[in-house]
Length: 467
Image (cartoon, rainbow, N blue to C red; front, side, top):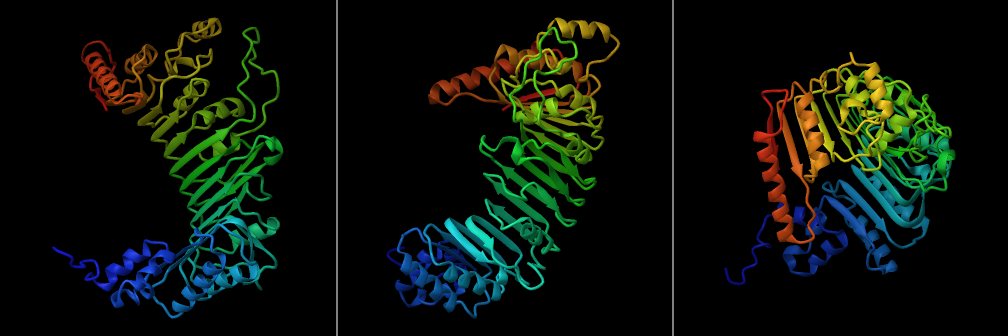
């Protein structure tokens, strides 16, 4: 091919797409290559501006020139501003105002230093996706008539500090077509636990608070989103929940963390009372999501359900249940979940090792304590919760081939009468490549042999697969 410049011979449409994938600062440098590249920057569809070099005045001048150059462009749809350094709020607000006035479809703002957005001009008839994160914070007076984004469908707020709760509510209510909302906070926010919108279909809430905030950060939490289809909620448990009847909900991911460590129950206490009151109540939250079809639970969520739920609703539409295990957290709530999921077809468990307690019931193969034996004797007529399940597919990930895990596998196979497929994903340590490969082969070979010879199963159609 010699020294032919094949890239420069590509069509303008292809070259503009390539330049759109780069930071605009760097894409602009290609204009010095030759006359062929001189005017290609005007064809990009994405302005991605990042001040990584630290040359503050140069960066400000470059942003001004880039916006001026593309003043009449019909191709630019997305504007992204990532500021590592502090600039005059007036100048930054001018950039944002220009982008909103020119009808960009996407706006992404991120800053390492505090920049206050003048909300008086913060409105757009064309904006479809808006992300505000880091140090950008809406501040000041609201526009005449309030914040209004009539076309906005996706809104992401990451560690955004609002002036007050009214401003947050204006942001949500000013988006009549909003379908996706993402909220991420590392510290308490006056309105972070309240979401109200009749149009939201996907809601992602991620709250990672420091321990010093504890319960005062969560006196209550409200989800008034009747058309919600997907929920991903990660947070410390709230004192109470107000949740709309989510009839449209198809999938939910819950990662709820308890403010207290799991308190061990004294064997002599027949009522099972803990030594201190437990903070949090998830009864209304579970009732609100009871129509879900797919439910994913973290190991911490199992603990919260055990501590903070008095009444488990019936999940009549639930087809897929997945949960994580932790060696310090028991499966006390698993029998309840299985008994209240009459149409469950797929069960996915990440790790089989969990804390052995006297309350895991017959969902696991833990050694029963005296109290469990006594209760089992009283309830001899009660069938195992696994034997009443309609589960057809069982997936186990993180399998390490221990005796305890094998015992649990036997328990599942001996009680899940509708089981058709068992998928076991083996996990081995990768400290040394050869040792890891050998261990993986030993575990999978042993499991296949046991599947053929020694693992009795109540379902004659059950097939076991190792990965």
